[in-house]
Amino acid sequence: MRSGNPALSESTFLDLGSGTVVRHDASAMSLNGTVNKTAFLLVVVLAAAMFTWSKAYAGGGAGLMPWVWGGALGGLGLALVTVFKKTWAPVTAPLYAAAEGLFIGAISAVFEQRFPGIVMQAVGLTFGTLAALLLAYRSGLIRATENFKLGVVAATGGIFLLYLVQMGLQLFGFQGMSFIHDSGWVGIGFSAVVVVVAALNLVLDFDFIEQGVEHGAPKYMEWYAAFGLLVTLVWLYLEILRLLAKLQSRD
Image (cartoon, rainbow, N blue to C red; front, side):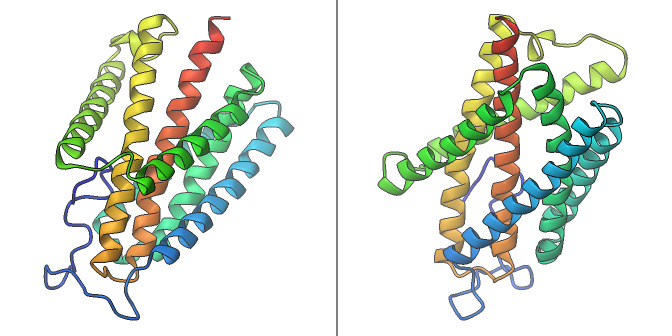
């Protein structure tokens, strides 16, 4: 099993104590349990996002940066803790969802104030993509073959490496690779590619979760799998938001 999502690595569903996969029993991971926990995390994200969204409009957009940085850094820290301490996922996954919700609500408000209507478009496209890819996966139109997995993992790693280099260059005062943020056709093309790669990660996540259920992973892995899927959804939403902003800025 392999996923481009760093939260869902090849050994994720291995029992941490013995290095073997836990077989099916009453305490094993189930598909319904994973779906329910994913839905719960999405509700937490929405509630937290509505909080910062309302603060943004109540204050005219002032005072958002603490929420942006607090949510982003808090979410990153909680994500790292969850990845390295999978058994903590029942606690850290909801906290991660809350932190990301604060971040997403603030960022979304900034985009919405500049491009009215963009947030609903991004939300609709994100969940539309999720539904379409889930249907394609369940129907067999898209299969997570080894070559497919390798391609998506390589593309995802390349994108994150590119973003990391860009942040490093900006940290030292260099302009860096302007096409990442540029609204020209090169920048739009780059964002479109990133959106496609982010969407394809959903297919890998579906396959990974299915494999975990089939192998009877521990019950707490429902929370961890839901967390991993949420990581991909947040990334996809932010990239769609960025792409739409680039397109609308050309009008």
